[in-house]
Image (cartoon, rainbow, N blue to C red; front, top):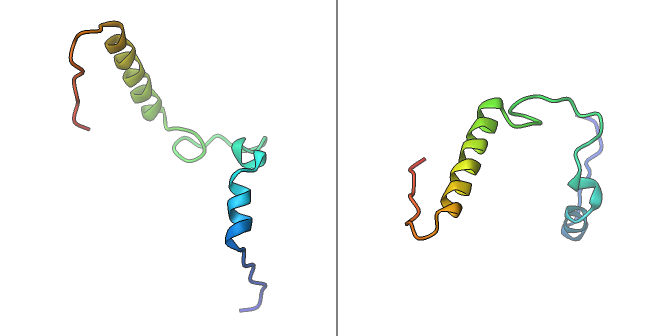
Amino acid sequence: LAGTRIIYDRKFLLECKNSPVVRNPPCCLPQIPGVTSLAQSSLVKLEELKERNESEEAMPGEQPRHVAP
């Protein structure tokens, strides 16, 4: 096999982690549910959890219920 092997050092990789480029998705990234965006079922579950958390916060004094995953 012919080719060039690129080796990155730890310092460079840690600096890349804080780059503003890695915080935004690429502009022309296709929307693939479950890969580049959340799957539709995941979005529904997130909305349900958000509503449940908001309703629990609105009712202080009650013990929070833990739901098994």
